[in-house]
Structures are given as C-alpha cells and as structure tokens.
Image (cartoon, rainbow, N blue to C red; front, side):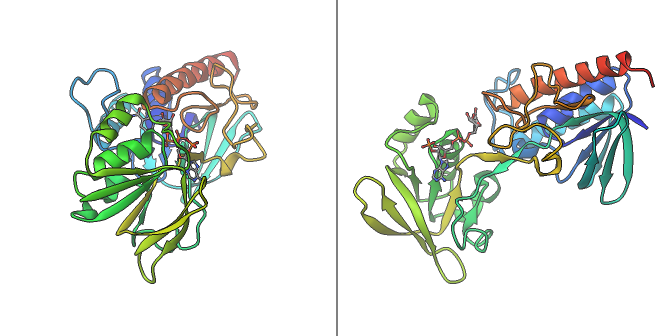
Length: 305
Ligand code: NAP
C-alpha cells in the first residue's frame, strides 16, 4: 500500500508529489497523458516567480516532474477508471492495475469548455482547436478567429499573430475580461481585430472549417466570416466525473475543500484547478499541492495504520 496516491500530473500534482516524497512518504502519481496538464499547453509563462525570462509551460512541467522524481515519487502514465474513497484504505483502479493508499490527492485539473455547436467536435483537428500553442503553427499566413474575452483568449490571439495574417477576436460582450496589460497588447497589434457583442452561431464547412456565422447580440445582425481556423478559449470545466456523487462539488462541478485542501471525505484532498477557488494559476495550483501534501502527512501521522 502506498502512503499517498496523487491523481493528475499538473503543477498541483507534481508539487504535492514533491512535498510528499520529500517528507519520506511513499508517493505514487498517476498522469493520464503528458506531464503539466493545461500548463503543458502554455507557450510561455512570465508570471511564475523565479524566472526573469519567460519559461515555457512544457519546460516547467518537466522540471517539476524531475524534481518530484528526484525525491522518490513514482510516476506512471495511465488512465484512472475508478476511485473508492470512503474507507480508511483508498482504492484507485487504472486501466492496468489496482493500487491502494492511505491518502488520495485529487489533482485532475480542468479541461477547455466547448461552445456546444454542431461540427465543433467533428472539425477538431480540421480547423477547430482548443490549444493555440499546440496548433498555431499550422496556420501560417492564414486567417483565424479566437472565441472568448478572457486571459486565455487574449494570450492566444497575441500568440497566433506570430503565424497568422489576421486574427479576429470574437467576444460576446463589449469589454474584455482579460487583464489590462493583455488588452493594451491587443489594441496595439494591427493583426488583431476584436468583434464585440458577438456570438458564433454556426461553424461552416463541408470537410473542414471554411468560416463561421456570427450574430451581434445588440443589433441581431448576422454575418459570415471566412476563416481557416477557430480557436475556442471560453474557459474550462473541472475534470470531476470520477468523483461525482462521492466528493462534495459546487454548482459548477468544482471540488469544495477547506483551506487545508481537505474534501468532505477523510484522507481525500484536492488541489489545483479542480478545486473551487478564486484564482486558477500555476502558482496557486502549486501552493494548493504543497498544502495538500503537508496535510496528508499530518493525516497519516494522526491515524493509526
Ligand atoms: P475565463 O476567465 O473564464 O474567460 C472565459 C471567456 O470566455 C470570458 O470572456 C467569457 O465571456 C467567454 N465565454 C464563456 N463562455 C462562453 C460562451 N459559451 N460563448 C462565448 N464566450 C464565452 O477563462 P480563461 O480565459 O480560460 O481563464 C481561466 C483562468 O485562468 C482565469 O482565472 C485567468 O485569469 C487564468 N489565466 C491566467 C493566465 C495568465 O496569468 N497568464 C493565462 C490564461 C488564463 P464573459 O467575459 O462575458 O464572461
């Protein structure tokens, strides 16, 4: 039996792993895909302390993983398919094995939200993308639209101007949610045109994206915009399917914890973007992970095994 199983290898998961394994706990981390979670899809980060020059998301992810491994964390890439959390001993079933632990730390993060339009899934990889960092380079000399008005949409729009001739930013309101610094960068970038008060009603194309039909929410005017690609950046939703009905969630599906990252189930903690919180950043995910691991150690010491 492990002391701690961590589900998810983003900044929360790897920081929890670092603190847990450095605290001499037997620590096992299960990551479905690649290390870093959403951070791995971030081109450059300039708000993670300690790096005067921006560091790439994948680079920081690899460093976090390496640091956790250095202290003894075992890492596997596998899909968790079932969690049994209510007893004193927790059971985690993956596609390949069943493992047990005294503590589980849930760090499954969040995934990009979809617009919910027909063809949105069908054209994924054929003009519809949820990751500008991953797919931007395919659009050299092309015209694309970014949907959304938050920090992600703003960063995506700016990033895409490296490759694209023209980037529309389509936002449903008349002001951006993104921080002022990004708003200024957008305003001064001649390749970016913001289309305000507008929603996408239809993705147009037969085998790939050829354009979109939009509607202005103030005037009701509809328009066709010819495009080569659409980048959806309208926020994210928590990856809590595995724990629905077990762990207390808020109305948006995020896990409710106390300030010690404890959920309603003894021995089960949650950290990072999966958690109900005000600010979802790499730094706050890392902070959550550290607290969760510290409290996990305390929980193990206080309970007889
Ligand atoms: P977000 O802040 O939730 O913004 C989502 C945007 O999409 C909003 O502008 C929202 O419009 C719009 N939107 C939501 N649903 C929509 C729909 N169905 N149709 C059209 N538009 C829709 O999400 P985010 O930009 O991904 O950021 C998430 C968190 O990560 C935030 O806390 C953000 O600060 C943080 N983040 C930080 C950085 C950084 O520090 N460098 C980078 C990226 C993200 P409304 O404005 O009208 O609600």
